[in-house]
Image 1 (cartoon, rainbow, N blue to C red):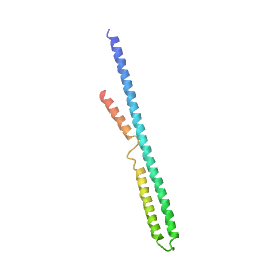
Image 2 (image 1 turned 90 degrees about the vertical axis):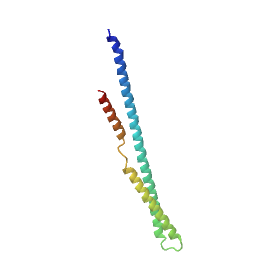
Image 3 (image 1 turned 180 degrees about the horizontal axis):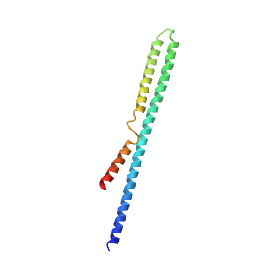
Image 4 (image 1 turned 120 degrees about the vertical axis):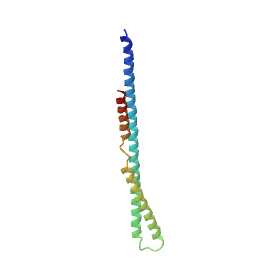
Length: 129
């Protein structure tokens, strides 16, 4: 007569197992979403730095062209224009290098942490068997 008493315990265990599995899957999906958001922000930052670099390089080249046009004019306009051209060109090169480093150095795959967590889950489940 112990058959009916074992039934609810088994069903309760199965329900807890299913609930735990669903909860683990939910946590892993949330972790993946966070990792993808971080990757998106990293790419956006890199593109923003690249756009700023292009702007600074364009201004520097415009000022450099102005320097060449004003080469034969008198006064102190030339040193000021040369200094501004050098500053904008230098800043543009520095920002371009910063953008390149940001885009080329992702710090791992976007889903490395999720894959690691899933591997740990698999190992812990194998240990219980």
